[in-house]
Length: 89
Image (cartoon, rainbow, N blue to C red):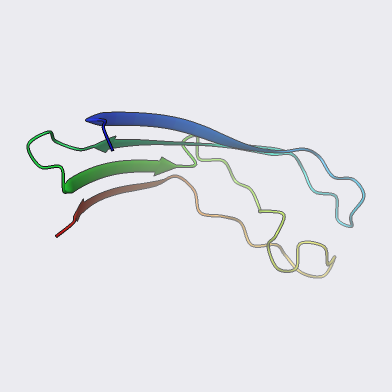
């Protein structure tokens, strides 16, 4: 890696699906992360990650039971923030 600071924004979009019972609503989820790698310590990587930035309520299309009318689909977690540090030896 040659960067010192990397910022990335990525999104997932799902369209309405009326071909299933129950119908599946559309949703958009935006994620963002920033990674910092100090020049003095190339073996250290610090990352701040924010998933589901706008705290949307949604069920992934792959959730168990989403196509069964008698089962309530599980929703994904709301906004999740994590900070991690990785040092390679």
